[in-house]
Amino acid sequence: MESVSYAELSRRLHERLLAQRIPLEATFEVSRRCPLACRHCYNNLPMNDHAARRRELSLDEYRRIFDEIAEAGTLWVLFTGGEIFARRDFLDIYTEAKRRGFLITLFTNGTLLTPRIADYLAEWRPFAIEITLYGYTRETYERLTRVPGSYDRCHQGIRLLLERRLPLKLKTVGTTITRDEIFAMRDFAESLGVPFKFDSMINPRVDCSQSPLEVRLTPEEVVELDLRDPRRMAEWRALNDRYRTAAVAPYVSNTVYDCGGGVGSFAVNPYGEMSICVLSQVDTYDLRHGSFREGWEQFLRRVRMQPRTRPAKCTSCEIRLMCTSCAAVNELENGDKEAAVDFFCRTNHLRAYLLGLDLKPNPLCEYRPGSERYEDIQASVAALRARARELGVDLSFKPRRTLPVLQGHPTAASQTL
Amino acid sequence: MNTVKKLPCVMRRIADETLLIPIRGQAADLDAIYVLNDTAAFLWSQLDNTGDVATLSALLCEAFEVSPAQAAQDVTDFLTALEKGGIVEFRHAASSAA
Image (cartoon, rainbow over all chains, first blue to last red; front, side):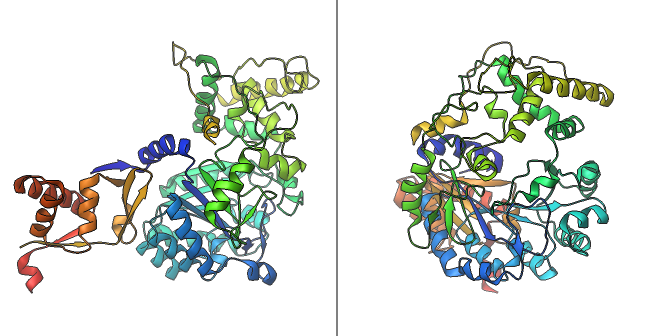
């Protein structure tokens, strides 16, 4: 018998089992209902949406699905929303999952947490709980959530979890409303002794509304936030260094999806529809009328193997692995899995150029040398370099390896499909 | 004679890995997870039937064809490691009789 850290276990299982296409990770949106009405949210519905509530999976349906995914090898389960505690029986669902030995992470806004719920979680401890902060000040928080009183309820939820020493992490989303308070929120998290992260990748709503994009930062603003966060810059630099010091196999993707979705992970929406990930809304398999095994082994395998139908700039993009875009994001924003979203493409190119990467011309990509928006993006890069100098950020390249190192792409797993 | 009580855990087999996952109480807050070899998985399964340390040693002896001394040592090592993680509790003869 050996005792291994969760990080080591994760690395070990992913390395060995992704090649066998075992669904290690599951995400369950248990409800899209939420007491908040955040401007940037891609899926929230009002708490009193009775039609949505009636469609949600029952506890018995969850029991059956949990049995099936445990049998298939799922270990990590994420419960998210909407707001997970919008379901009054969420703790029953959670307990059923715990009894099957899943390592469970909870995403919540914290506003519905009560002492009773916190006590229960202290007894049936989750692997992690992540609360999203929507502002450091009450004014900003409630400007984004559009619900008076939500700031105080969130902070009460944080206190309840900390008092019970639950494994809390805090995070936020970078928007036009929150951007000036992101680092105050980071300092707040550090003062509590809990990890913090932020992300600025906003998507349209799953009902096709583009309203969240009204609060989305520009690519230049997203990268400027990187510059102000030394840890984030270090991560981008490490990823960027791969392209200079390692003999990475050229990125070639012949499939529409090139992520871990459908290879080692899947998502289930509140209504029992399984997909590659929570953002993927079109290719879904109804777990109410079919088994998980059939959905995973046949349906999602087919989805994951969908071939590209036309050449695209992403197909041979050598910085694709730095990009946070994907087919589901393309589908959500452009209605076409193969049509890259400009926001993600420009953000990725800004990061690469800022860190000094020389990118080759690509007639399909407007941000490459010789293409129509190359000069335009270089002007933004120059402005960001000036900003880096103001902030004292060193962007110079410092090689860490002297020999080329061959590293496989994550998409190698897809070759085993 | 010592006996052992299991705390709530689930043994998961994922591909060829056998994991012991605490689900309730402070043990569920561990920074690490136990990966069981065949002997440990066998012992954990047997804990459903008996908490008696001597009986566990005898069962191990029989199943894996090891000497009684080796079996006793393996059982002790296994249970001591789990006790440190808060996954089992030893009950000594005097206290269990009380």
